Length: 178
Image (cartoon, rainbow, N blue to C red; front, side):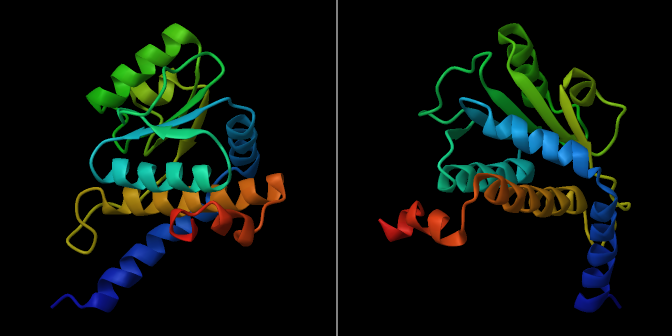
């Protein structure tokens, strides 16, 4: 019989994979985010929910950030960056967004689970999240989505350091404090 602890240990073991991330790549991506006029984030399903959380944090840091497809999102330009979250790297919506970005020369940042996919190949900046095999302990895309969430929160911490922002600075831009 599977217990909650079995699932927790399986997931925590997976998150150890994040220790293998290339810090230079993550720093380069963070600089690209800071140097962008606008940052757009896109993902489908649960990856999209993770993307929305990240876009919210970027706004709380005082950056211009949008989730692709929202009614208030402006047109993407060559001065912008677009972050695509896709475990398979073949999500049709994300592929369409990548094509549009290529046309206008926006920088594409991808987070996928392998190097063998269309979104990875179309990107200017890439992070591959190696995840354990899905199982009943973490079904479907749970490991990718959860790893994405942790990675993007790690990037938030790095961006805060780069901008010399504190949690108090973010709190002042947090909607509940208005």
